[in-house]
Length: 252
Ligand SMILES: NC(=O)c1ccc[n+]([C@@H]2O[C@H](COP(=O)([O-])OP(=O)(O)OC[C@H]3O[C@@H](n4cnc5c(N)ncnc54)[C@H](OP(=O)(O)O)[C@@H]3O)[C@@H](O)[C@H]2O)c1
Image (cartoon, rainbow, N blue to C red):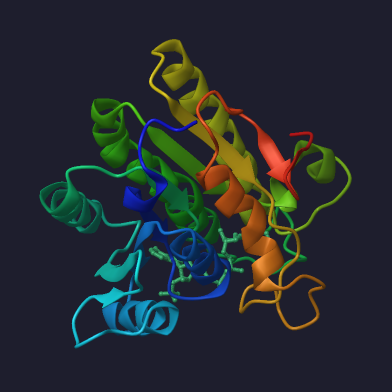
């Protein structure tokens, strides 16, 4: 079993104001976890927090067992990440769960690697890869101190090498997600060696009906969020350095 009480756990979900991130935030809050929604637009973040747990008398929103709050966070901005890390440190002294969900799909799906504007590639990597890396660097020290951590990187089937070998789908996005998968393995290896009780995994949520996935996608946000929420609450000695879809390990 986990070394800390589940009801007292603190989670940060980046891009938790809408889509899959919102559904992950909701699923974690329903398990009694204190959830911090990271949102570029604080008003959207606060509205999302209120819709998960309506406020009792204004201010922070609570259910009987948990708290849901929103903080301004742009994962491409180091100052924004530092500010949030310092707020979390002074408020709770720890972060148990980090869900790197924030992501962008900027390229046209039929872009070719020989023609795509490299500014699109840079901007995609800045959010989908460096953003997650920045968050890990900021919060791993707090997790190490607490001897507990669960990091979930929301990747994509588009980042699986098995998919990339067979298609030319959205090269900037696909590269960013395969790189995020490599980052997952690297952090898992580093933290496993140090015996930190920090588990780091990547998830493919499937094709999900969100602003990014579009209305034709076959999966609901709840289905898309399920494996991420499961990985976020793995027991001690659970898997680390893996890539999961529907709670099952998949090929990189
Ligand atoms: N939908 C799918 O079919 C699908 C499939 C595979 C993987 N995924 C992955 O799942 C994750 C969530 O996707 P989604 O479908 O829920 O997308 P979405 O509806 O477009 O939501 C994306 C979220 O990321 C946030 N975000 C983007 N850039 C950010 C930044 N620089 N800093 C902070 N937040 C930022 C957005 O904030 P704003 O509201 O401020 O824009 C929004 O909250 C992404 O990583 C995506 O790549 C999605």
